[in-house]
Length: 147
Image 1 (tube, rainbow, N blue to C red):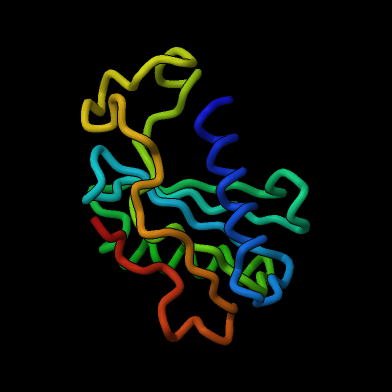
Image 2: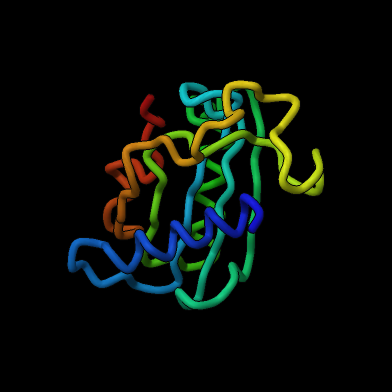
């Protein structure tokens, strides 16, 4: 199973364990990636119409620090609004390296560009955070990844 499939499975599990809160659809997933567990250089946002389906739309942003980049955060908010999202699940932390298996390096191997993640489990964040959107947008749906 590749990294993207593992991330989708984790998000589905987080939605199922949302503390009794009903997840409303469409649902956006926000997952951060970076060269280590402290710096997010990529963010992927997927839009799901149902929990048991693949994302209908997936968009990625990259930069030196995607969390601190106001333009990227604004584009993410616009993307979520454009798809009329009702709930947002955000990974609270950096989930893994920003490079993609099969695209940037062979499937099943460690990323040669991010030695920090070699032999480390992905998703070192504190868990997932469920937010209503747009009601809780002022609370900032994209928290700073925690180390």
